[in-house]
Image 1: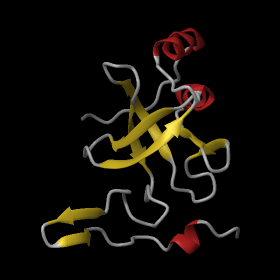
Image 2: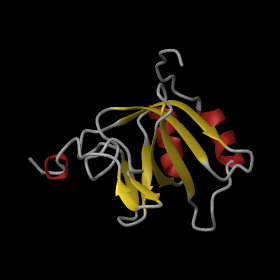
Image 3: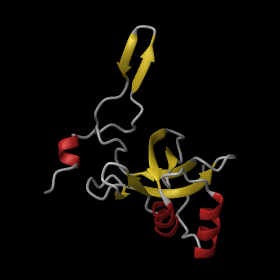
Length: 141
């Protein structure tokens, strides 16, 4: 994939998109983040309409935190931000695919992605090492 930069989406297209997307009864939609140049699946999180709007207008990926019940701007405390390269949704309009440029690690465990547990015939294996100490990622200093 060629090198891209984010171009803000005009408000009228954001509004049309919000009407197309099928949010759940709780007002949420699953969003998968994928590294735009390598295809690596980084993480899955939830978005609401406000998170979609902010992401499309700013280019910095924003999710909805179900545990905090608030917007979660990826990298706000850790510095591990995601820059939006492309915003897609599936044929059923109920899942979002975000092609992003991940700065640093995506997972709160300090790993590059959240999919590091693999089930094999020999058992469950951790297939990814911690790249960044999670304590350092989320320290208030």
